[in-house]
Amino acid sequence: MAAGNWANEDELELVNEDGFVYKRRKKFHLDPTAAPKLKDPAFEEKNRLQRKKKALMKIKDRYQNEINQWELLSTTLSKMQQNQPTLYQERDTVSFNSPVMSSDPTCQPLVDQLLTQVEAQEAVIGNISKLCDVVEAVWTAQEEKMKQSVLDLPIWAHTPGELISSLCSD
Image (cartoon, rainbow, N blue to C red; front, top):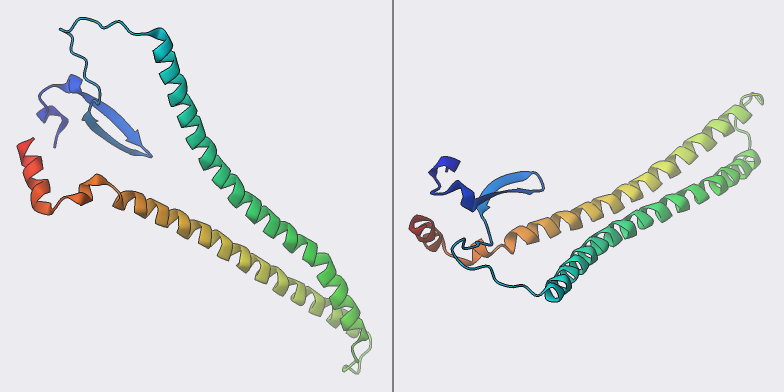
């Protein structure tokens, strides 16, 4: 539907919801012919503070969830970093105490060093894999939350015939 098809452009407002821009009818219509009503400033201030508090609580909850997710990732990373030095020490003691299979004794320290590096890289890859699993779980939960918000829209409560008839009546 083109924007020019509407009867009165002043009755529309431009809405931007997470990058999805569309026009909709304004929620509050003021009748210009009606006499202005006297408003109680104390009541209006109380309502404004309640709306502000509700909005701030919603933002706080959203940020708290993000903080919890980042703390989980941070603790996982710090555990990975703490395990790395002990891994190097264990590998060094094991590799130097192992029997020498080579006939050339000068190659043994190099082989032990390379073996230690490969084992450390294996541990790092395993830890990163675990971290990726955590991130994937967080992403899946976020995706399910978004899907549920779409499925909870009131439009799904109607049958397709009712939707068509309501669209044609407007």
